[in-house]
Length: 267
Image (cartoon, rainbow, N blue to C red):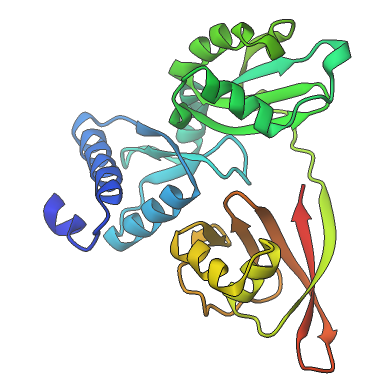
């Protein structure tokens, strides 16, 4: 495997480091004939890695985040002798849940930001934590297996969680994510991506282009840096820091020829 040749088209140092580590995992998996896996990758890294492996025509991998719609995922590389069932049996050895059950008087008090903020405040590594599933009673925090004990021990040192019941659970016991949607309408001059980002992020068109250039926008899970990309019905747009949106309906045009779009926002 010529690592330098495979990485030559990638200019950003952080991309090269990420992909170089992926190549190492692939090499180790082949050499040792066993499963290798990374820490959690964010949406940009997932898109980067997926496209890279597709170019390599490498197929012995799985991107796993604990549930189907997960944004943060671990790359699992496995030997050719493994099939899907064998791989699934290993999920519980790779990923765990740290479950926070709030006391009665604090139920419904905390949002995703409160849980993530607490983890950051403790100085713990973000890449060890996947998605955080929040509900009225508390939250399920998805973590890599070897980090679950540390998180369980550290969380009670935060005032907000000192009276909470914190336990480690198997990934199979992950609570179902309650999907709540807010319906909204926007009016765009055309179906270009930058028009949608401008309206959904409530910013100017030029600022929307900057957000796209900063690689903060994803369409159907893939990082998109082309401002002129044409969007279509049922496309899912994710803007980091702003939310996730689904194009549900093109509801006609205005007198000036602009398109009325019905959007559902995940809340």
